[in-house]
Image (cartoon, rainbow, N blue to C red):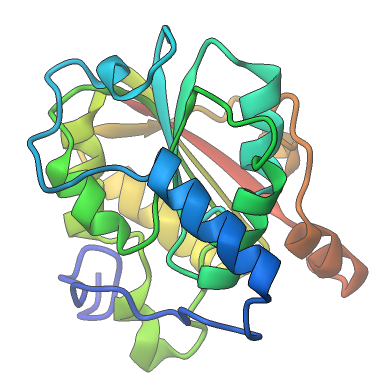
Length: 233
């Protein structure tokens, strides 16, 4: 690997945008109320059993990093009410959209964090997650910025620490260089194995995949998404 390859040490911290268009008053109210209800409290130690983070009984806990407009997370919350979901999104407008959507339903299987995902990964107890989802992360297409990509040696180490044995890491992107980067990184990491069984697997959407607006735009513009699934050894 080169010095800018996936095994290199990436720069720590969040590099993406935090704000877009001004949040309207009703969105701001939903955001404040929703965060008060669903936000993780990182000031206290994480519970030994992550299922205790939720007021409802859940059988497992999953994490989605950078949920964007929340299309997949909302679908998952409704489709699997017996699973606890932690959604991370530092982009204020994305979090506001999600909080608007859950304002009335107030799902008991949702927790959120509106800052850097690394903060949550380092806070969680080891082996408590069943799955981590990273869909359409910022690709940082310029080579000089590749070190900012979220898939890195340190973050795969973090994933390995918080995933249980047999746990799953799912990745989706329409950027070929980032797909290759992730395959190389996970192949080089001793904790992960790619679960593809045939050539078509990496272009086959995940089971019960609802799609996202970003994905639809990518397809319209001629970019073919890839869907990668890795298992924690």
